[in-house]
Length: 235
Image 1 (cartoon, rainbow, N blue to C red):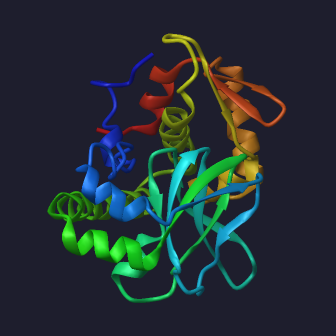
Image 2: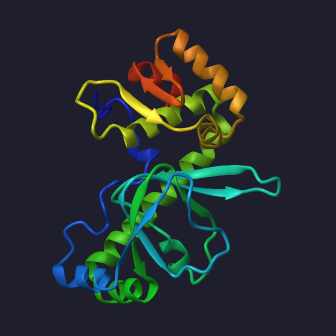
């Protein structure tokens, strides 16, 4: 089922519409003339924190996690990007190296657009510049909401919230009204919710007992999205 009208998904998720959608043909040509198509296996690194940003990545198919790694080697997932979204442009705009890492959550196909082509297109395309500015503003609001979530919500609420958000990324391909399967490891869910794997396993067992979700191996099938939204306690 659609969550439109019962959950403010825009507060927690970046806009999925591609920045490149319906760009004037001359602007799109500037971007795509020297593009290359790259395939990534599940778990394969796309770029690492501290690396020089040689270009941007457009997700043609698949899902990618952006994350940071602490001194103990633990991941903190910042965001899960879906098809139609772009990665790596923040570092180029700030003339800095990548401030986070990215890797494929599943088999993915990405278009790589060289740095120079992106900057030329950005300089010459008023449409692209406006869209990128709007996207950056929205991303800042989403990240601010996520920071508040970690300080104000319980682990149970945070996990419910992340399941609602991630479900939206996996719903394509499932018939309207059908349960949506989330194919994500417990470790990645723990990283998204800012907790440990053991808490995720325990809370998922509680959700399963309450017939909110079903589990099949690593897959999580959301059976009752309304109950998840209620637990997430978001307005």
